[in-house]
Length: 544
Image 1 (cartoon, helix red, strand yellow):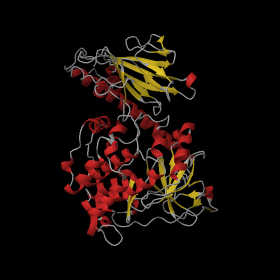
Image 2 (spheres, helix red, strand yellow):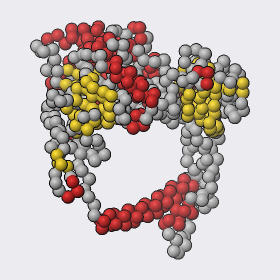
Image 3 (tube, rainbow, N blue to C red):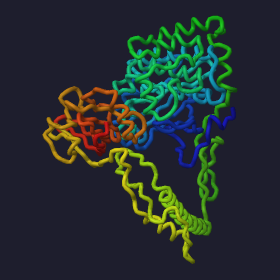
Image 4 (cartoon, one colour):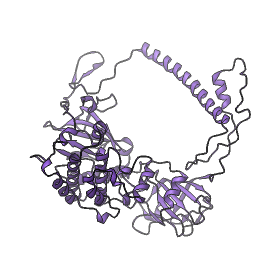
């Protein structure tokens, strides 16, 4: 494995240091921000994770981040990446953990394929020991998955424990809830009931299955369908090597109470390893999966000013961010002319492509209607006049002119096979105002509608006597079919809003068979007596 596969050079947009830590290289990026290599004063390598700007601007995120960091500081385990420093109050929040020299499980499997059974047993034992240390401090990982497991020479290291809640519960997230990664969630987590220590055990088993199979146990595809399989179907354990099946079957039990504790998992795995484990406990197969050891870039010393034109700085590390090169006025004018030329060509090309696309749609009689949530359909099945015929082109007509003409093609009505989406923007509910799907724009008393709002219990919630709710997991953009799929398997007339945020998507079905998608735009629940929720509501009539 080449050094550039692990350490990327710093770019001109990267900071040179974070809170006194001189950055030596890029390590990657995740949902919370970008990760860099640095060193402590005594020379220990650390991974510095810098929070994304939009998260840094959210006071609620900072509060959660600080709480999770304080808890993570207490975790001390042989199979965790120790948190050594952090600052939740900095202009850009950050944290530093000990750098683990080894690939992630995701990278190792992508490079060499599924791991041998002995390596998987050692992996499970190490992950279980890490969970013991994490759970002992009252932390639930919530997002244990292959990319959060690093493979060091002496065993795995679990990273990012506890941070998932701070990141994904932020008001800037658009994933809604539940919190976590779909392919590695437990059923109770996927259905929005929340994650517990037993949920981490389920994720441990899914991560181990990925290591043994080279792919997720519950299959690939859109997150919403993966979660549906996790909630409503049993995993096919016959795909797994036989020695792993008994333990994974217990860890993947639908009932959290039936799953074993991490201590029992570690003990079971080490008993099965037996003679395969060498004096230090690691099987020989483990040493092969990480690949050759890669030299870590040396610490970066402070830049030294050099008396040359434009006052450039000399850096002592090849991964340090390069300084921008001065540009003389003549070159700048030439660049502007090139940009203007390219922009003009780009506009003409875009118009031409768009016009051709409209013409193609017309010649095919319109495309199959895809009824997406929140967007009223506007394409009809009636082709424009002349579609399918070839006519001579007037002399002197240009590509841009033809494209502009094509944009005037009349739009068409949606397919009668699916209900039409009715958009209702900025629908508000609070203690005094509720909403009926039959007439979403009509103000109703807070006690009578299909969607009501209450903060009487612990936390605020949506509730109804007759309608059912389902918080949609995965990426935003839920469709009518996805709402149907999940609503057919829920009987919940209450939906807690504790983990909902701006962009969270909620499917609703009333007693008349109308289905709606409510996308939260603003949630204000800090003061229960003044609490409210606003959002965009899309309704499909008789769609159940």
